[in-house]
Image (cartoon, rainbow over all chains, first blue to last red; front, top):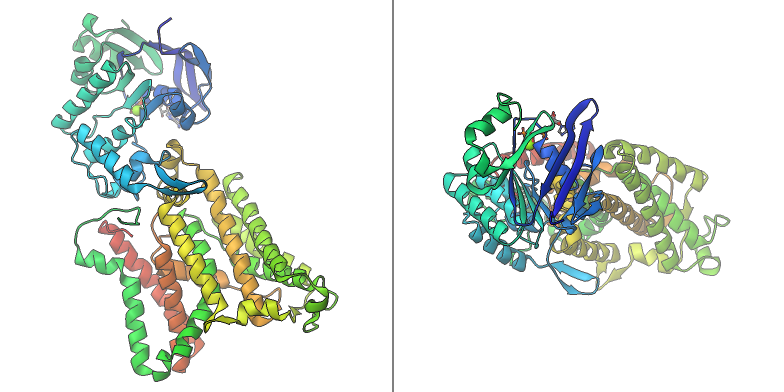
Length: 247
Length: 337
Ligand SMILES: Nc1ncnc2c1ncn2[C@@H]1O[C@H](COP(=O)(O)OP(=O)(O)OP(=O)(O)O)[C@@H](O)[C@H]1O
Ligand SMILES: [Mg+2]
């Protein structure tokens, strides 16, 4: 078995709402899977379950064949799962650099006397923003940033560790054409490094540009999961809207 | 290197003026009083102002941590009453000779035990409230409103109705003594303010306080221990209330169950005037120190000029609202502290 991540029979309900019903999904290392579906189809919910933000109502999450029960996002992160949340999860009152390092701050000092190493965090954040070709300045407050700059901050976070899996929940929703190209490039670099990526997107061209497989959710059920080479944007659009029943 | 968690926003004179409104106003106020009343600038009077604000200021430092997390603590005045009585009780070794001047010298416990007891009971009060906020998910306003009445009730029961007074010289020194002419409570206030500033601006815990107040959900997602951070800020304000209360009892050479009545109002006013946002995530110890000084200078100057205490109350109320109004404008302009 080579899959790094394996979901079986994942269901999630919020009270009476059935957000997910019996979803299976598997990903191999270095594989990029596009996850598509209409608003409310359950894409974010599925990724949040993988990232430990929600626990599934039923079903199992396996990492390298081992069943995982994350109780909080930091546990999933420690297991090598990074996620860019759809709402970006930023603290507006802090600088870009501190947001990147939030929860994983660099410190210096001896023993229990430890102080934030802001200089190192600024330098590293500047490096990451440069890598993303983003104009984001590490010292700026997130409050004052554009949508694209905020997204760059959220994406930069995933570059702090050596993750196994990166989940991107609409990472290109608010950014310019040039920056979309950078994010797609980043995804290819993650792939080359053997990292598995799930890309949630409403933009069919992006999915067809970087993904080798596409999975489609419709009202909580997976209605398709096939190689990009064997499908077309038209079919995928039909699957999302329900014009095509399943594939 | 900047010690701020927050970045530079470029030069904007209006935002800059709004940002430093409280310090500017403090300087203007000092200048006005200096012109109007020669006695005001006398070093003894200035030292007197510092001595008067230092006890309230200690609690305001703790309150700054709480308000930065978007919380509030209304119970500090009652914690002051309870912890002061505890310190007095321990110092005296009981209630038998509660009024006997100097009795503690023969019968009581060392002063450090009294201090420890006040701090421990303050920490306990804070822990109970912190646990109620983080575990029971009761809003801080409600939890500490409960604390306000409950701790006062405890203090009244504990004191049996009367004050405990007459401490050993060692005890009283903490409230009335001086080092190189500087009152001991002022020194304690300055030391605690410096430590608090360093903790807030240069440690992970300090950053987590700001993150919790800025966006608790996002902070949590990123692995910030939001619950622990929130719990700890209530412990901090409890401990500092205990410390302040000990100093107060030492200054008055007496502790009583009605000590610290309505103290929370002054403390919260000082923190807010100092620019800490009640919505959390923005503010500083420097601002709080300025707010504390502003209230102290205003009170002292108006007393010197024979303005009635009722007018003082009105003025402090107006300044409080103005301070928040200035802050809102600053927030709208994207300026930040
Ligand atoms: N925390 C929650 N509490 C209650 N219901 C929720 C919660 N999160 C999601 N839902 C519901 O679950 C369903 C799926 O939501 P989800 O966010 O996964 O959709 P999505 O596919 O990501 O949509 P979008 O494209 O709009 O982001 C929706 O009906 C939503 O209302
Ligand atoms: Mg979504």
